[in-house]
Amino acid sequence: MIREVLASFRAGGLPAAAAAAALAIGRTRFYQIYADYLRACAARTQHRWQPRASGGDHARLWPAAVEPLLRKLLGAAPPASYSFAASEVARRLSFDLDPATVRRFALTHDLAPPRPARKTPASIRRWQCAKIGALWQLDATPHRFFPHHPDLFPLLNMLDDCSRLRVGARLYESENLLAYFDFLPPAFLAHGLPLALYVDYHSFFFTHLPGALTQLGKALHFYGVSFRYASSPQAKGKIERSHQDWQNRLPALFAADAITDLAAANSLLEKLRTHRNAHERHRELRMTPLAAWQSAAKENRSALRPAPRCPWWPYVWSLRTSILVGPDGRVPIGTQRLRIQAPPRTRLVHCQHPNADISILRHHPDHAAKPSLLLHLPA
Image (tube, rainbow, N blue to C red; front, side):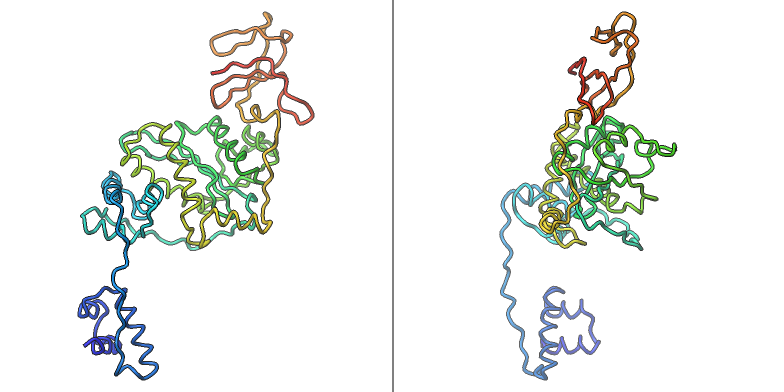
């Protein structure tokens, strides 16, 4: 009977679904048997061919905590995707699940979300750098990451163009210079200084004055990092796809875990970033981003430079403005006027740090000199 069903399918008289149903097996197992049958046909032994046993069900039993976690993630509003639910099971419970297994579980237990509209595939794939650190893509995306909060919060996101390693991801209340000054230094300290950042024409990055730099551009230029500008969102598709990934994953997880504040959200986001780099295989690279990064480093395909031990470091990454010492020898800081050791009418540098500390310097950062700190006020 099995040989008859397979012969009918081979002759085109029976569709695959009907043939699999006739044998009471799934499509995957059906095609496994059919491939073996075709090999017998090629050897002209199909008249005495017999299927081999499948070996039975080798699926591991799920730990007790897996099903409640899947129900929580898939039942959240918005629900987690199948791939993200599988990733969370691996991260939290160290148990590997295929996204297809999660999908079958969701369909069986009425937890499947509505099918999203099919996206048009990109017609052009942009080049990628051959060296890690040659180019890091940087962008911000505002999104409603907290489902029960009406406001949009910007996510600052940065990845290495060569390895796709996500070198930074963090949520902020607003996208401003202090947010970038807070975001960039930890990534540089952890991974090194890249040659360039791939950005758009936002006013934080681009000025229409020929040869001029924005304040963020000046800070990066101080350490030999330049901007490279993308002509369109499609030109920086890697970071745009990363944005979509976070937009799909974070609202579901924040809803499932009842996370409503930035501190808890960023703590979890850092764990997710590390886990994704180390354990989630990139479909184009066919390896994890961390493995691609380590492979490039082993092959001397690296343009990274270590972050310098520079005394100017905390002041370069601050919002700097000019301030004038008054006739009374004081400077205005907020609602106060504080005395400072500098002659009246002297121009000084007011530094606002990302952690809300205030520093007063005698001069702007200069490689030929050391910082002269006149006043420091902790937040």
